[in-house]
Amino acid sequence: QEVSVIGTMNTVDKSLAPIDFAMRRRFRFEYVGADPDLLTDIAGVSLPQFLRTVNARLGALLGTGYEIGHAFFLPRKLEEVSTRMEWSGQADASLRSLAYVIRSSVLPTVVEYFHEDWSKIRAVLGDTVVAGRRDSLLDLPDADDAFFERLPEDYVRVDGRVAYYARWWNPEDPTWDSARFNGFIAAIASGA
Image (tube, rainbow, N blue to C red):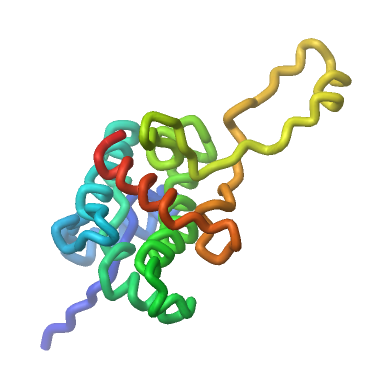
């Protein structure tokens, strides 16, 4: 009798290397990459192209094995988020769900991939150009000029390394800006 075990494994996590080697000696593995063609467009934005763009950027900076999977963006996943968060019926429910998924799953993964190197995070997914102006999902912390003036002259400030998620694209926040988020995601999808 034969038993099939189907599971997923992130080959990027090097802390699992001993388990990975043991599993590979005992089982057959098949690579299953992200499949953007399983996605649909929402609010005039091509999610397949958005995923291709983000994954191409990750691949250019990190190499293979650092893709964002299509499962985050499947219509059923976005509908489940919309229902759970009670956005169903709202005109921008699909955009809210997309923002929620990017905020809670995708961007934290990108942050982990780059070990909080915010310049690379911004390059891949954090910043883009919308209608000729720079826009960002990230805010820099407030600068305390008086504090920095008291530091020794040889202190090197780490601008760009620390960032916070901007409130404007938090679908649970009163400052949520659906049109701005739509423009941002469309710009990423177009490669801007």
